[in-house]
Length: 410
Length: 223
Image (cartoon, rainbow over all chains, first blue to last red; front, side, top):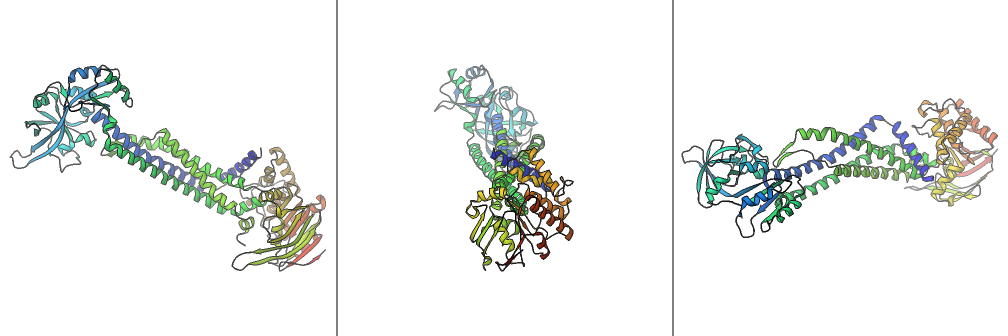
């Protein structure tokens, strides 16, 4: 009962201080808290966005959801058509695509005079264009020229980093070839063939933009192989549920081949993800400390200006804890209003803006990714920081002697 | 009612200052006394010790048979709220509280219900002649009115003793007279024990007894 009464008085004093206080100062304090919240959420969301983009790009342009590789000590998966038919029959599987993968020396004689032939090693993949378009977004990424067709034999699709044109980031290693140019590929088995560049794709995912595609039929003629593949990638409806599909694939009798989810191939980005998580944590901590110091300064100035009044309240018999609580409530008010405002700005202005205008990163377009959990954690962290920052100066001043608080040092 | 024995107060610092050097006196219930003396004689320091706003270096203060210096900080806070009233020289009102809110705040602190504390605060403000100023903020009141609000706040809990630290120091003569008459009426009508610090010799006519301080010691007492 008594505690409720002391809380009632604390609320009364806080309410009076806010309602009769300087409106500009209050508005500015709330704005500062809102900006502190946005700062916390923004940095964190950008970093989350980078991670999300890396994952999405890897799934959409490189690995799909599941990758099947040959059994140990084998170069190729055998009876690929039969395996693909079985996999495609699993409910929830969108499609599968079999690839021959490898490296080759790409040579381009720009002037066609044999004097300035540029040669560089690149990775390539052979695809069935129709199958691939169900599994990856490569077909949608062709921005210059055209995508491959099943019947194409002397055509090649190259990434913009091999081309070296159209905003390439790796001009020094690229060939400088455009659509219609002829490129000679020297395969590891010594076979050498000439291909016309049919299209240039820009997936905005650098790992994919630096490879080339030829048709499966063409590759089988180069290798003199049939119904084999270096890998089969599988696209499923529900990303995140890869383990279930891997089990389903194994149940079909595909037991010797290595079957892995796409995450297992994200070695570099996994370490990057861990580093970004550490950076996120550090930035969040710094943001929290800065926000805490801001509210500390605001409350500290308010408390110092009201030092005499605090002394008077103590002199007329008010308990210190009531006075402290009234300042904590004020800090709570500023932080809740600030966080609320920050949340509204984030949800209705910043996130929609970056959805429409994503940032251009090497791994693809990045927009903000703010999960409810992140928003809530940042919200509560900031409110707790504000409460602590409100408590400390109020506690310090209420501990002062009454005479000193009212009349200064004696 | 008040028994003060060998009360001394020394302020620390590079050069310690002995503000009170061993003061002893009694105040009877219902008495209105004034503490007078020149600036620096120790009168405000004495009132701070009596009002439990400060801790003396040595000595004894007994109020209503309570050795108040042995009380804990929490008990002193409770004692100040329930047993003592304090009027400051410079009004000491909170700028964001109206006259009514200022006066009912000590009643709220005692856990009294809203209806009752508003009624009581209104009555006390009427007693000090501010029935038309209930919802005015301090900056909307004159100096004399602000001091009357401060007196109303000090007496609203029916304290055993009212301490007033130069309550008319910042007021014109007319307002000063109003305040002193008000204190005299409280003393006469309600039997309120009052200890007032003042430096105005003409204030002697309102009080029962004057304790003269000089250099931290009682110089004399007269009626």
